[in-house]
Image (cartoon, rainbow, N blue to C red):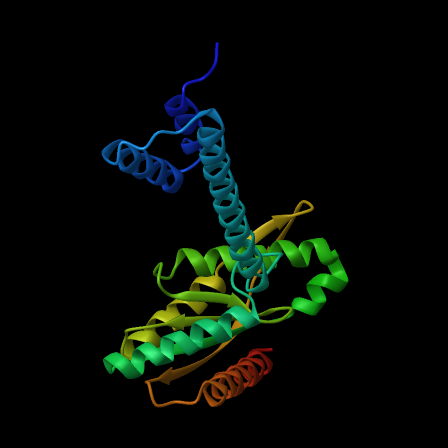
Length: 234
């Protein structure tokens, strides 16, 4: 049995909402104008609609692929959090918003203490386990609109937006304390986590590169201070 023109267009239009709307308008226009089509005419219309549906589908798939690749380019493969490139992008957006809305926030740089010794003693799998644990801990102790990034081997960064310098510093020091009380089990042993932190507040007028450098220097000052304290206690 030969398909009716409306049935053929209906099947083609089911491919996506855009083509469905286009087919509906075409049918109404044809009916209102009392246009008459033979079988070859309806076949041509069906092919045009089918081509439109196929083209739109390919474009949608391409957009999804581009989005996926863009996500990969700013994501750290090991931990699943933002990488250095993603941090710079997020910091740029955060500072632009701070300038626009006259907001302040803080940037924290965290560096793991004794991480090389963990890799040398227990192997890189143990080191990877610690990095994943740190990333998970950081993500679970910040707001959903804050940013957590791994920016190098054992260095992490956190952007806390829309908070005062005092509030941000308090939150990041609490986060440091949380990490320094965290342990993981690996190979039947308990591994401890320790980190140093550098904290730098920002508003919309600060230069991103200068902000990153200041937070990095503050982190190394904290690491130096912690080492001195350990030597005094020894």
